[in-house]
Amino acid sequence: MRRSIVALAGATATGKTALGEALAARLGGEVVCADARQVFRELEIGTGKPTPAERAARPHHLFDWLALGERPTAGGWARTAADACEACFARGTVPLLVGGSGLYIDALRRGLHPEPPKDAAVRARLQSECETGGVEAMHARLSALDPDAARSLKPRDRQRVLRALEVVEVSGHTLGWWREHAREAPLAAEWHAFQLVVEPAALRARIAARTEAMWRDGLLEETRALVAAGLEEPLRRLSAIGYDEALDVLAGRLTAEAAMQAISLRTAQLAKRQRTWFRHQLATTTLGATVEPLEPSLLDRVAAAVGS
Image (cartoon, rainbow, N blue to C red; front, side, top):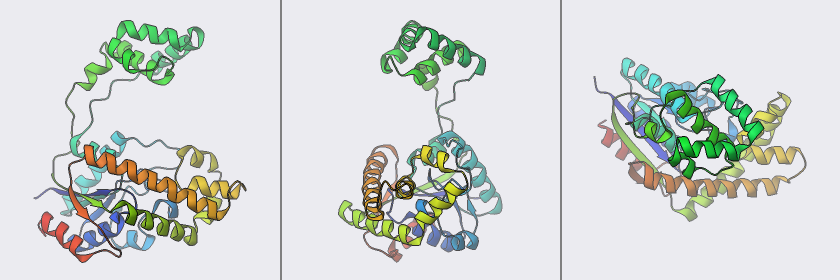
């Protein structure tokens, strides 16, 4: 049986969700969330998830992977997504990874370096020693044990210095030794990876329109409900675009108009960072998405490449 994965990546607001839904309908495929915010089950409007009706029309996976307060990692997502893809293969369907988290997609496609071991007791002891002697002294110790790691870390970067010391103590090997190991892909499959690209000026207009639509569709009310449910603290820790600004409106620190301007600005800044990452880090076939709604030619190109 053919094991094919389709990945639809790209910066925010480029039309990935619409193309993913249309392609899933065309191929009889199943959508797998590859977005670092859409994986939280409590977040809907502000993340631009497929609508409840779209998610009910065909199988969707990992859109409720985590609860607010849980920590997402590329490795954890890749392992969970690999299981979802294997289940799709077993059913004879094509998994479609849809989202803007390139690191997630790359972790599934190429794998991650083996994870150095952890030891809670060693970590606790190092933290205690750091409290007593200071982080600079711990950095000096690291210089003797792992000079390369020490040179790459700031002397006051407490978390990373202690982690590097923990790796050496627990495993007997440096961080560099672990990173020299080959990546281990979570599953074997034929990949078809596409990146949707929209010119910056057009994308800014899309972002502004999407921001207004999210606000109109109830982003503020969704945020108010999360606060009422006792989820304000984990929501703030997430630093999610849109929700941060909605929280500030609820607290009286921003007007609705100022919030929408801030959301559009932060979203455009995110899109710029994503474009840079995809350009240098992920091998894809570029698809120019110049107008909305979804151009039929885009769907035809992807379907043809996949062989359907």
